[in-house]
Length: 225
Image 1 (cartoon, rainbow, N blue to C red):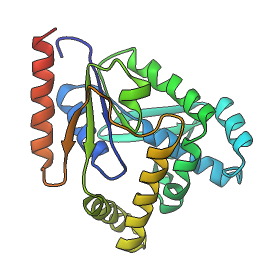
Image 2 (image 1 turned 90 degrees about the horizontal axis):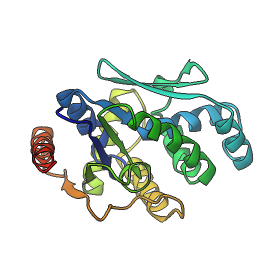
Image 3 (image 1 turned 135 degrees about the horizontal axis):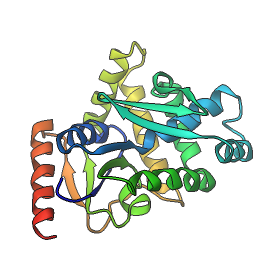
Image 4 (image 1 turned 60 degrees about the horizontal axis):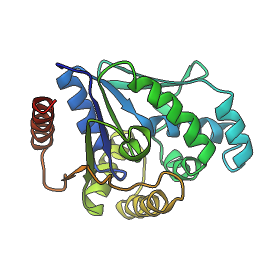
């Protein structure tokens, strides 16, 4: 990269944010920040500790914990108080609770601090639900990635099958629809498109198509700077 850039990608669950963000980060040698993984990690540990439904205890836990995220060899690794929880945060159980945890303003405030610190150091590709509107409102490039509900449910279903998780397509689809309602309707940092974001509908696009669009967008941005 000729200059440090912040590239923020937002979108609903299952739209393909993580996949394209990883590919892009690798292509331009940037740091990849999976903001959603941080909320998942907090949710997982809170569930394990039996406090996930106690808002005050969750807030206290986050404020007194160290959350780290590392991207190494194509894998996002997440640590809470030094314990790696990477393999535990993608379960259906965590999916069912993460939106509730992410609606807590104090939790978001603490994690946004960490995310912004990462963005100060080098070129980053950050993805989540409020990266372009709240975490990095002055990002150089903002993308809102979406896809049809059926397409997103199909993608998530395949992820579960590959992980050995038993569920049905209808259960996955309803879970995603419910998460869309929570994420878009929450009062603090709702999922929404930034006014200056590029919209990409990945329903019928290949990863290669998406990556080429983003690389061309970056080249054009650098020409104007």
